[in-house]
Amino acid sequence: EVQLLESGGGLVQPGGSLRLSCAASGFTFSSYAMSWVRQAPGKGLEWISGISGSGGSTYYADSVKGRFTISRDNSKNTLYLQMHSLRVEDTAVYYCAKGTDSSAWYAYYSDNWGQGILVTVSS
Amino acid sequence: QSVLTQPPSASGTPGQRVTISCSGSSSNIGSNYVYWYQQLPGTAPKLLIYRNNQRPSAVPDRFYGSKSGTSASLAISGLRSEDEADYYCAAWDDSLSGVVFGGGTKLTVL
Image (cartoon, rainbow over all chains, first blue to last red; front, side):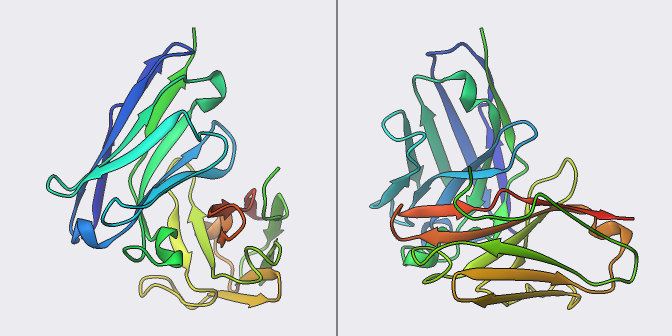
């Protein structure tokens, strides 16, 4: 059974930094791309970043490009999201999501999701 | 403003059939797969339809996905109270090099 467990969320001031982690189990982690998807309170889903199975390719939404960095440690079966220069509008539940292939164009669609972790950016 | 366009709401009575539309462009739906997700209140999204019209084994055949040109649809037949949820379409966008979602459709079972 695929399991994805996010951690590292919490309250941070505008301009601050935070690192999210996602511990994966139940599948061969290195064989699948992974993504981060967020959902602001009362709003819809927003895909913000994806990384290939090897970690060699990364993609970002314009809303986070230059501020967020996605990475993975395949030896630890863990996905990360380093967030800098956080803004009030980054407040959301952040989901870790498993992709459907290692690196093909369709790899970044998600077929399994974590339970989500709340990040609140506020002074 | 979402790249993919969905109606914000839909409704039906138990047993009825409802359809949710998702409109995009040539750079997303027109050239790539459409996925559909169901999000029950207070929970994480769950995969409902993949590769336009394929259902994971645990999803009942009351759920049906289709795609034509730059639009896609999710049909739910034999509506049940437990189908009350938010539904999202998604597609890879070649121009943006990322996955784009629709704004979501809140389905109410009357």
